[in-house]
Structures are given as C-alpha cells and as structure tokens.
Image 1 (cartoon, rainbow, N blue to C red):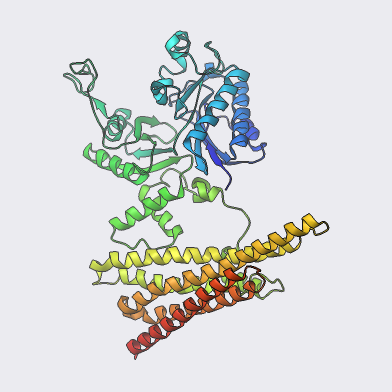
Image 2 (image 1 turned 180 degrees about the vertical axis):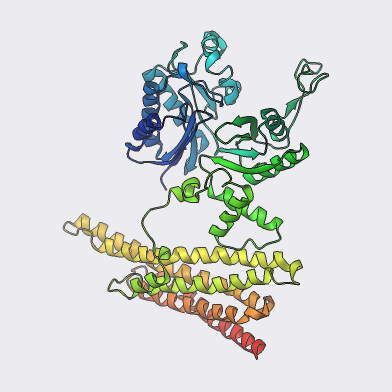
Length: 560
C-alpha cells in the first residue's frame, strides 16, 4: 500500500476567487496529488484547501502553493475575523494511509526548511513537528497575529524555526506542522451576539474560562499560590472554540476545532453546544462543516442519533449519512453534498462499477457478449440480495408496534446484515476485476526467458486470486444464513417468506461461487492449495444446503 498524506493549507484570502484559483492551479499541476476541497469564507477572509497524495508530491504541491500565495496575497492589506499571521497562515500535514505521525512530522520539517530557505518566509513548526513543547500549540506560535509579528520576530525566544527573523510585510509568517485529522466545525446560533457565542464556546472547549475576581466578565483573573492563572475546564476534551459573528449569514457561531475526533466526535460537540445554548436561553439552529470530514465521523453521528430515537442502525450508509446531516443541521446555511465533503467519497474512482448500475443495466451487461460479469459476480450479487432481505426483516421487526423493547436486538442483526451486504457487493466487482487480472497476465510479453518466467508467475498469482474471491463470496453468503435463520425464528411473522427467499439466495450464492472456485482451481499449479481450498469449499456448500432445507421447512410450517 502506498503512503498517503493530506495537506490542509489555510490561505488569508476568502473573497477574491481569482487569487485562490491561481493557488489551486499550482497544486493541481503536480502529478500524484488530488485536490479534494476548496472552502472560502468571506467573513473570515480565509480559504481552507485540502489535497492528498504521496508525500513527496504533496510537499512539492504545498511549496508551489505557498510560493504563489507569497506573490499574490499582500498581508499588509488583509482584514478578517479569523486569527492569522501570514498569507499562507498554516500548512498542516496529516497522515492518512500507511504512514506514521513521526514520518509525517519529518516531511513537515522538510517542507518548512525549504519554505524558509527558498522563499525567505519566517516558519514556525507546530503540533507534532514542533521542536519544543511551547510551539506545539498553534495559538502560541500565532499569538499577537500579523500586527504583533514585527515585535515578536525581534524576540530571540520567538526566533523562527526556519527562515529569517525579519518581518516581511507582504507574506507575514507561516506555521507548518503535522497533526491528527482535525475537523473544523461551526455551530450556528439564533443570536447575533458574539459575547453569547463566546460564552457557549467557553462552556464546551477544553481550555474553559478563567476564574475572575468580582465581575465574571471583566474582573481580574484569579491566580493560585504559585502565581498561575486559575481556569475552569470546559465540557469537552480535544476541543478548541471561540465565538464570532458572521455577517455573511447574519448570525453568531461557535467556531470549533476538534483536534481528535476519537476523543470528542462531531456529534458530541454538537450536543454539548446545544446543551450550553439552551441553558443560556439560546438555540442551536444547525451547523457548518469547514473542509472535509472522515466517513467514520459521519457514520458515528448518524448511528448516535438513530439510537437516540430507538431506531435500527442497520440501514444503508446513504441513509445513515442523511440522518447525520439532518440531525446536525449541516444543510442549515447551504446544501451539504456528501460527495464533496466526505474525504473517502472524494477519493473514489470516478469509473462506474457494476454495483452502480441499475438492475436493468446489470442484467443487460451480464447478457452481453462480454465474458464479465459472469457467474462469480452474479453469485455475489445474489448473496447480497439474500442478506438484504434478512436485513429488511430485521428493520421491519425493530419498528413493529408492540415490539419496542426488542428494537436494539433487531438493530444489531440489521447492522450485521448491512456489513455483509456491503462486503458481498464489493465482491460483485472484485470478481470481475480478478477475471480481468488473469486476462492482463495472459497478455504479458513472452519473447525472452525472463519475460516467460514473469508471465507465468503473474498468471499463477492472478489465478490464485481468482480462486480466493469466489471462495470469500461462499464464506460471506454462508455467514449471512445466521441472520436469515434468526429472522425466520424471531422476526416479524408477516415477513417470514422474505427471509425464506433470502435463504434460497444465500444457498444459490454459495453453490454458484463454488463452481467458480472449482473452474479457476483447475489452472493452478499449487495442488496442495487446490486440495485444501476445495475441501473447505465442499464443506461450506454442504452446510449451506442443509441449513437452507432446515429454514425452508420452518418457513413452510409457519405459513401453513
């Protein structure tokens, strides 16, 4: 698996999109990098750009973007609501795939050194790329903002990590770091008061608020016997927040940075903001996502709100995301488009898969003169339909009047069913891909002895994989029969025949997939592997046939 990192530079320009376009053009011209999102804000006069790719390609794209920004953004003329001290204000690198935080931090420092040396911009390394503890916190690096930068650079204590200790009025300074996935998230309030939005922010953020003498807002901050300020911690860990007024929308917001969503997920930040707002006579009207969010965060949010409603979480991914969007009010200010805001969706291959076709389209493609999709793909699809029927029965049962106390039992079964359905749908296309892999191997050159050896090895590897895919279909289809059996036994009796049809589908998927295992095994030279896989396949096939007969007998006894 290739290493993958994300880069999320924030540029101090959010109103003139011709300037931003010049910057993103620099990013897009680098091979191996994909631009995922460009999110401008007029009130903050700031644009968050997100792109991903291999580390070296990302570093090149980031450098070119910073270089372009240094030429076309003049910080001496910048005004905006968000704290900032440079044209490219921050440039964090985030580990995404097959790369450690330590490796990512090393890349961040490499970028910082190049920016300081070649562009002459003062650079501070922050978070996991910081050289000392004080500079880990971005707020410390950026304290005083652009206006306080000339004085800051004169202080030896704040000598930049890279670049000159000289104020550059045009570019300002930049913070480059490595961090965990950060979700920038704004909660909308039914007020125009920044002070009240700040009150909510202080309630929920980890830092909390200072204890003051006398007036709770203007009084002197109390200190302990050691002279340290006394603060009351807020409700949430790994959460930074401030309140501000957004003229563009005519409302105040709580601007939140969730620095570790495994500690404080988005939906808990939303709930905490709702609780604080209500206690202060305010109401949360919705929320806004800045930049991208991982799919898991949206799924977790959707399931959280479904469980609050005592509803089954075993529904499709699309439906779960829809619940998350509506529950969080992510479409309050503008449409929320999952394909543009969820990072995994942005990375999807634009090429159409079999499972993206209509039922009619899939049937027509199967019936065409093309050899794929074939029996393996169809077997996986039959299996997906079988477990989908069982999942439907589980969801209907969880909603059945008078069965309210059992909703969670059926929700658990439905959730298992959705997982197996998704796995079998993946195998629909994977079976076709495995067939194409064999065809590609046969098409390799075979002129020299070396080419013949490489071709033979590739054919054997592709053949083995073409055995493993339908065998996996067998396993998953048979595994789905556990859910089908449960629905026959305890599910909504009005849907028992649906579960029975599911059993027929699952058994057919097992037998059909085994045919593909056997035909592909005939071409593999590793006979020990072939013998073992055929033995296991035969056992699964017999078990599936026996279980299908048992389930059909039970279904028929109940409907007669």
